[in-house]
Length: 321
Length: 115
Image 1 (cartoon, rainbow over the protein chains, first blue to last red):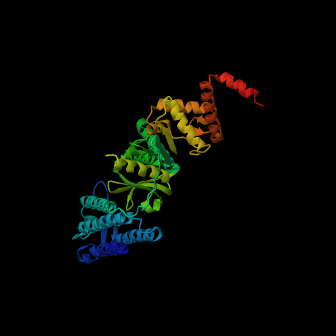
Image 2: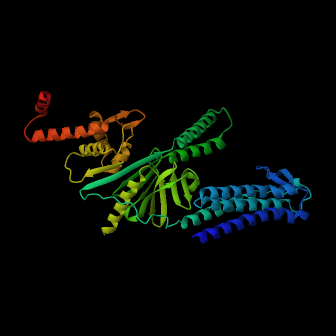
């Protein structure tokens, strides 16, 4: 285990150093074919360069961003331990994006005497962003696949239910900050929508759409209802109880309760990390299940008894053919 | 909270729902001031219609175990745990009296003359 973690650390270190070298080397090695000042910013609409930096700054600036990202990820790992698996995802996607952007800048400036003559970078930057997102997604998926199976306790909690009794377990969690965020974002979107509808201003779609999305997403993640019945586990999101995820008792391999913090899983809301999927609304006890080879956790009070009942139900499902 | 239902119970469903919640309160599953899960969630959990759940909740409110508050949902009343134990015993008493042919009015009269 330690050996594996060690090799992961070395891989991360190598990746950080490699990207750093690439960011610095790309402009410096091609300095002979670049103008003294290189274009580093482009107008989004016309695609013409509208900002520049001296060559050395263009080499150092992205490297500095990269160094800060790497330092933040490293610091998070030192404080919170190896459970912060989102670090790998961040390093992968940021590294690919930064390297791609740097390559785009160098290519656009190459063989031009003045920075104002530089080519457009739009397709390259879009490509770099897509590649970065893809690399991040691949990293997250790999981390999820590697979900540690050994993390579950050897002695899962179990509950005795008399044969003539039906026992169900209900619990819910809500996060007032996410509720407030949803309310504020929703209010901003609504005001912008009303202004647009009245014709008081130019259409404010760039304001309405993202704020409305934030409002809906944070409202959906602000509260969860967890239900354990003989039909299995049901985790319902948001005030409407929709969307919801379900697991049948037969699909659940084991369940236990565990303490988790937002720092471990990469924040609040619906998180994918090295620990599997976590619905994180507050630090503290979480109901963790392992089903179909994957881990799913939801932060909820009284998780021990929920887990005990789930174990009982899945055992029952395994015994009845 | 953990809710327990007796599968052999033949009482009307709304009474069974009320009974399960009454027992949960008596056993300290939910403390005074706690909010009960929404009726929709309870109906899904117990596998009964949400109108049946609401009927059960209303009868618990009439017993003084629950409080319905606008915007706060349904909460457990102060002292509900002790009260629910007492209410349970009164119900048993009424049932037993009925078996011996005594009406509620007779019971009330008996209680009145108890010093």
